[in-house]
Length: 120
Image (cartoon, rainbow, N blue to C red; front, side, top):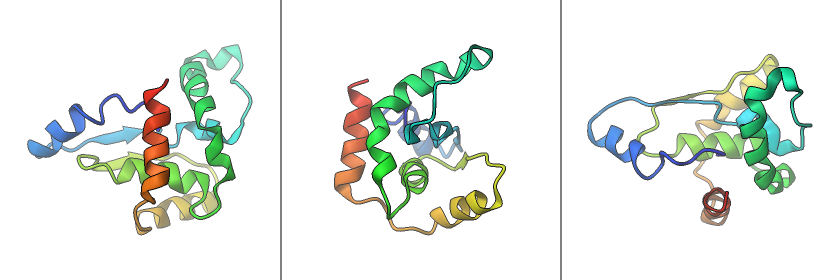
C-alpha cells in the first residue's frame, strides 16, 4: 500500500503480457498500525515506515482487519500474481491465507488508500 508507483504503469503492462508479478512487503511490515520507527540497525526500513505513517487511519479498521485490508488491496490489483506477507505467527498466517477469499474492498476504502498514496 505504501509504494504504489507501479500500479498504473508496470502492473497493467505485466498483465497485458502475461507476466507474473510478486509483491514484496504488501502489508508494509504493518507499520501503519502505529509501530515505532525501526532503529538505525534497520535503517533500510525507514522509507517504508515513513510512508506508512500516512496510513495510520487503517489501524481503526475492523472488518476487514487492517492487515487484511492492505493485503486485499494489493491482491486485487490486476497484474499481481501473488504477494509475500511474511509472519512468524500462525494466527496471522491463517488470517493472511483467508484474505484471498474475501470480497474486494469497498470503493470508499480503496479510494482512500489510493488517494493517500498519491499525496506522499
